[in-house]
Amino acid sequence: MEEPESDRSAGSLSRGRRLLVLGICCFSLLIVGLDTTIVNVALPSIRDELHASVSGLQWVIDAYTLVLASLLMLAGSTADRIGRKRIFRAGLVVFSLGSLLCGLAPSLGTLIAARVLQAVGGSMLNPVAMSIIRNVFDDPRERAQAIGAWGAVFGLSMALGPVVGGALVDSVGWRSVFFVNVPIGVIAFVLTTMYVPRSRADRPRRLDPVGQLLVILALASLTYAIIDAPRAGWASAGTLGLFALAVICFAALVFYELRRREPLIEMRFFRSAPFSGASTIAVCAFAATGGFLFLNTLYLQGVRHLSPFHAGLYLLPMAGMVLVFAPISGWLVSRRGARPSLVIAGAALTVASLMLTRLAPHTPAAYLLAAYFLFGLGSGLINPPITNTAVSGMPASQAGVASAIASTSRQVGMTLGVAVIGAISGGTISGAIGPSFARATHPGWWVCVGLGVVCLVVGILTTGAWANETARQTAERFREPEASGTPAPYRRRELAPG
Image (cartoon, rainbow, N blue to C red; front, side, top):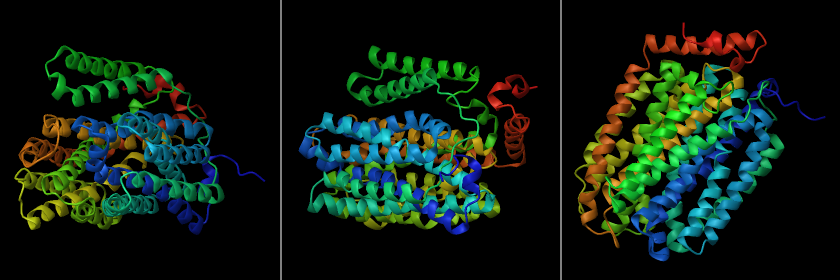
């Protein structure tokens, strides 16, 4: 007999089955996280074989994160509508196929195109997996701990990525870093088919093609403008035109979504100060992380002349701290709330970035590793409170959309971090990267300092009593219409301010 596709069916699972589902969902995060860190370590080898410029390397990263950010909300709402398990399995197939094509790519253009396909599959994994976790774990404390485990897997992927990726690049070649995703994807597909329960929202949302198009146009024009600006000129007509297009698309998106019954981006979530704060912190923290990985990979291999494997070992302390402190942060959030994790994380990111503003070709290894440890501490602590704030307190029917917005914020941050920090630090470097690149990274690290300060300040402002009251009121606005039997999007007047 087929399992009913409803949110209630997932909530009735035994604890052992819930933990098994958590493990399978974390498996999807593992391959996506591995892909990010492995590809960063492989960038210098890709540059040498495919004759890529710094901007070309930026697109190897940003083609993936840009498409991922653009499609996450569509994937989340579509999974709520037609079934989370169905979309999750489709994502595993597309991601694995994209990985295979990346490994076979004969040119930089083909590689970037395959990265786009990879991103289409990846967009169906993380937000959908988080939505599954949200519906399987009903108890808030148990959910926070599950999200902490989720964050630990992200740390594990970061810890494994540089070392495994470096070893693969050294021994087999950069193409193997993509091939490794294929067997992992196949295993995850089989386990999902066997053990993950079917679920979907009781009142699925309609598709929003206009909102989706505006998201793609806004993010694509903004990213292209930033990456191309060092070549075309920041004040050139083309660059300014792209920035103007991005602003117009963002403004049109907000205007349109506020008036749509079932929007792609539920703007009313942002009435919750903790939710808005978590989204802001996600963008800033992951922008810093994206810039950190991009600049340090090129610095370690291009300036210090380390092999990919040894460069991966240098990054291991940062990744190891994420692995250790993500579950600690999940435990801390479940008992003390989000503020302690966010405050310590913001301070650690700020101090680590300040240390890296002194980067030189022969910076002592101990100093460098200390900065990496601090950066990893901040990255490990910051992810669980972001995720928990996004999905906690929201009705189960909104889980896909809420978690997709949180995931989108991360990917937007990663995209902009690579684009902005890469453009500021490496956009004027052509050909081989040499000793001058270390000094060229300094403005990028000052940007990271500013991002860390924003995380710290916003973390304090959006975790107090006033902020928690706005979160409670926002959740009530969603629950009351649903309790009356009327979907929330059809009760716009009751939800308006005042």
